[in-house]
Amino acid sequence: MRKKKYLLIDCIKKEVDWEIMSFLASGKHRKVILKLLKETKTPTQIKNETNLHFNIASRTILKLTEKGLVECLNPNQKMAWFYRITKKGWGFLNWIENYQNNYKHKKNNINMENEEKNQGNEVIEKTTEVPSRGGPSTGETTSKIKEERDEEIDMASATEIARDFVKENVGNLNLHQFRMEEIKKNGDKTKYIVICSVVEDLGEEREYYLMKVDVLNGKLVPPAGRGKKVDNELKLSEITIDPKWVE
Image (cartoon, rainbow, N blue to C red; front, side, top):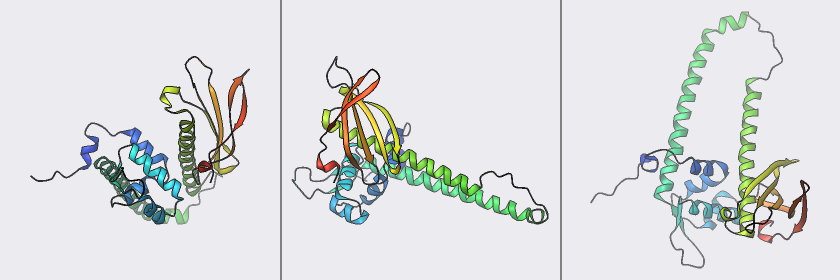
């Protein structure tokens, strides 16, 4: 029997799973590692090929596995796990690459049209001066858009790192009514202050967590705090952070 080829349409028969697309877009390394796992590899091989810290590479692979985009081929082994992309992962990767190719094609066509238009207006441009109004140039606008997009991605990464940390402390976040309260920059462009909260037991007041996240290396920056809100002000006590989150 002929083996069915996994086509792009197989993963999006009804509509694109935008939750998965958002997940892939919000992590700096996820798409890169997903592409590398077209071939079977270990976390150590991924680390060596990407120059990422081993913990970041391992955690990224684990998240891809949880989403069903990657699978472990020998989960019963205690070490040297081998991973590869799944059928679902292939579908989303194909969709992303197809979208990017279409975008580049449209962009090239627009550039060609603009170039032809500019050539046609060359004489007019040489003889007519347009006074500057002091507004931002195209390059400045593009740079600003890129900065805003990068910041959105970094904020999403900081949020996910904070979620993982709280999840390790309280367990299933859905059962504890996890809520993101605030996220903001903290001077250094790679570091963010994240405040989130959970209800640890039914009927109890919300417990608030405050932490500083460095999205560049996927780690927390001590100290971190936990506590309650009293008279609309947070009263926090410092908590111990497992070394794996800061090393």
